[in-house]
Length: 348
Ligand SMILES: NC(=O)c1ccc[n+]([C@@H]2O[C@H](COP(=O)([O-])OP(=O)(O)OC[C@H]3O[C@@H](n4cnc5c(N)ncnc54)[C@H](O)[C@@H]3O)[C@@H](O)[C@H]2O)c1
Ligand SMILES: [Zn+2]
Image 1 (cartoon, helix red, strand yellow):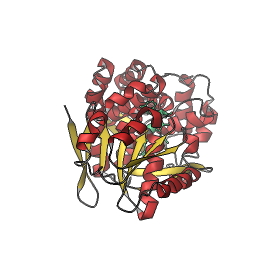
Image 2: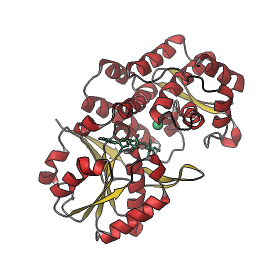
Image 3: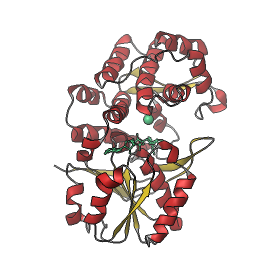
Image 4: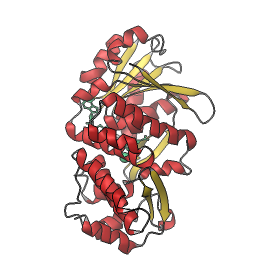
């Protein structure tokens, strides 16, 4: 069964997110419907190109494969320059479409290339990681990293269409899958408690994705430019980014966010925002998908120092997304350092 979620764009109009198993295998018959029968550049990394990129290009009448290396370290302006050169060679023009086929790294980089090539060409997101399906492909944020920090250059680029085929998750490494589930749990915790039951029950991917995508859609429709409630999506991320950084990126993003959400729940309880059952719920959900539940010896002081450089801490004022209840997030400013350190100490 195909699920269709229409996303309202800030300036009016909407675009569809289609979720259907086997969608990519039937793309030839639907190329005209998706306006993919014209000139198309399929941008994939060197892992996804042989897995799905070549077949996708072969299934479309007028598509060329454009590649970039695999890995966050390649989400750069240098990679964009290489993509632009390949786009010109492939004969893409202002009427062409870019398909971003991959995880969040390809989605962000190819999306930014589509936003700027010839002042912007049509973009179709085909997310292939669970994280990209439920998080990065929805909401129009695209961009690349600078040596000075992550996601420092970018744009809002609304896609024309998002195509999600859960069948591609068959080849996603288990560790990456767990990381995607961390974001699914996050969506449950900020807006849809029933989604947590689905995660623990292990419902099929298409259903999980539909529900998790809907949470993100509701938030970006209400706050497309991240002026208020879109910040709820940072639950667990202040702790998480610090853990990634202090571990020298030995921890994957979703792993750090998983334990970061536990820290956020414990901090919420410590500050009397919520009762202990909320902490239990978060810990159970994180454990159920096999993500780490302790910070395994990372130094609380070092984590605090890393958090203090957080872009979202305006004027250095500690800011956390906390929980008043499951499904009820709150943004809290000025959390005392001692409370954060105590929570982290207990998580070691
Ligand atoms: N734009 C946004 O709103 C937003 C939101 C969240 C995260 N992000 C960004 O997303 C990125 C992380 O995305 P990610 O977790 O998808 O990482 P990723 O793109 O690096 O993908 C993870 C790994 O899985 C591989 N992979 C992906 N799909 C596969 C498949 N179907 N089969 C086999 N291998 C597959 C990739 O090649 C890669 O090695 C970060 O750069 C982050 O900043 C952006
Ligand atoms: Zn995240």
